[in-house]
Amino acid sequence: MLNYIRAEVYKLLRRPYTYITLAALLALEALFASMFAFHNSHSMPTPFGGAIISIVEMGAIGFCMCLLTGDIVFAGQYKNSTLKNEVSFGLSRTRIYLGKLLAQTLLSLVYLAIMMVFFIGLCAVCLPMEGPAGFYSSGDALIIVGYFLAAGIPLWIGGQAAMCMCLFLVNGEMASSFLYVGIVFVLDTVIELAGLLIEGGFGNLLLKIQQHFPAPLLDGAKEVVGDPVYLGQAWLVGAFWVIVCTAIGLYGFHKKEIK
Image (cartoon, rainbow, N blue to C red; front, side, top):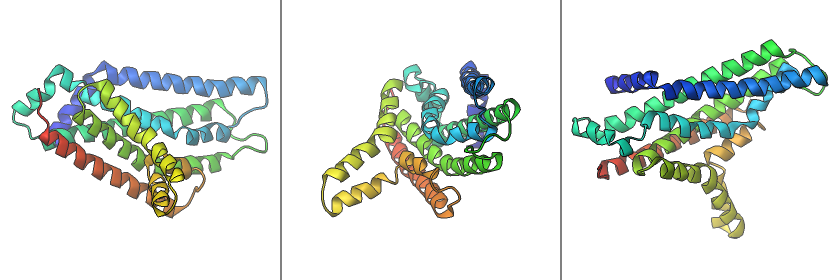
């Protein structure tokens, strides 16, 4: 398994796609930070805390990143018939699946670390550390962002497991991406709507289930900063999604005929 992961990491380091994606993301972050700097020079200044607190409003981007990292690692293996070659070579399907899932997760975490350090560091250099009343102080903003990231990481990893499942079960990058978007961004809304329309205990059950989807749970993290129970719930939900999606993906991949 370790050798397979090393091989996947080696391929990632050799692909221009990996670096082009990161460069584009950092460029977008730099543009976003420059908007605060431009605003500061022409109007009431936005301090460091007021800028970085915007991170908590962008949790959905973490789930969107799973689409990119999944595509980078999986690299259209059904279309290019490279997955069939790996299986024919004698590698177990479990090793292939888990190796790619771990490679995707590792790439996502590296991207997250680089992007957070870059954006927070850029804001620290370009923006005043303290500002007018009404903005979060630098210390408070860092605490809020830190809690949000601590709650978000397991949920984003759960999303990564869902993306890996879709990539292995569905032939075609576009189809697997649509399935992933449906699971992560649409399914919870459908369940919530059904819960509101159905009266009685079953409707209430659906509403409770909807609250344990990754996206709604992450959205609520910014309202309960410092709550260890909510943080633990986020980690449990993230672990649940990883286990369930991995089990479904492995089962389907073992049953799937690779052409």
